Length: 515
Ligand code: ADP
Image (cartoon, rainbow, N blue to C red; front, top):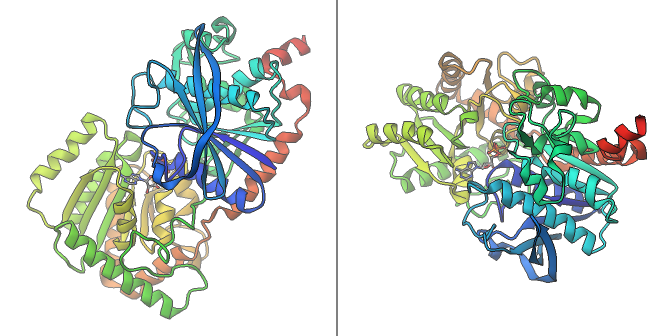
């Protein structure tokens, strides 16, 4: 199958969070199963250029129009392993992708709608006809209506459009005039059946546009698929999602096990095997290596080297991630005699100030480190050194950190929501067979919930080390690879490719056809 992703992230070369991991993990899995893969990305100045190969100009002089003005673009090609990347470089006075970071600019809507339009212009110009065009979250959502209402008429042929909702919270709401820049008449889209935002009727909602226009939609876990169709989890789009229920699937993310593998991880001083089949000897070696990694890590961060339980959190410091619960978890861990390391990135000022205050108060505490950075190397060393990972999210579409942690023999403590509920099975309360239990969870996102799960974890670690190792080794044995999920994606691609022509035309056309 010929699959083209249009995405704003691709790990590890352009990554802000899990979306980047998913695009590259899924693309690699499909490529290794013999499919033809391409990924179109913006040519950010912050791409890790030393990790891609064969960077060269593929097309010069791709002209695109924005609000009546023509701009030239250069399309670069490169390889990441066996995957072909196309990087779009606009020659534009706003230097859209030379901002030093992927997101966070005040004109992100302009940047990513520019990219969406240019990606389609490139496919048309290069006469490419992918069987599946796979889009991801609001940054590339506009591709779906742009293709169906403009580019299909211009001659671009795409088998089916797949849209993945990695996080429904961010929807790309903007003035209708944004659509005019790309040649779509705002008044045709500012209606409830199309892209009108349910809360702000004067705004268009890019993510809603993809829900309406894509041939298939999927969320990144089965539980999140159900949650987003409720008033509580639908972020205002529950009615639109209910209307298009028949085209939504929940497909659990995998992790890229060639990248997240403690036996080959070049960031670790002490490597260890966690892949099945695991013998008792291998498990013992894994815990010995983890202990050595822990010593090295604590020393490098200036913390006391001890046998105390080490709890970590590796996260964006966003409201979604339960920052107050993380803060509470830190205090509780210290009270219970443990150590805590938080690696947190991209914090809003009010969230950041909570942790800065704690950091100041505990300045001399050698059992706590708080690091405000996105640090890939440190993340790997933390997964390998820690005993427990705390993820108290208010909602979590899938969550990758709990799966990575288990692969590294670190036991997850999570709130039972979204993909966390689909991957972490509590040692006491879960109904799965005993041999499949792999962590601790709590239902309500409050302090009592965190205490209940954390206390049980710390008690098991301190009082029953053999049982602890058994639990951690059960987590290691889970198959969180992309193999299974990649197959599910293929089945889904085939299904949406088969949808009849009438239902695949744009909603506008369908309405006319019905009248
Ligand atoms: P989200 O996509 O909502 O941020 P996920 O759990 O799906 O959360 O994915 C997070 C990914 O980003 C994981 O690969 C995790 O290791 C990584 N990550 C999160 N925060 C940091 C950080 N501060 N430094 C390094 N890596 C991080």
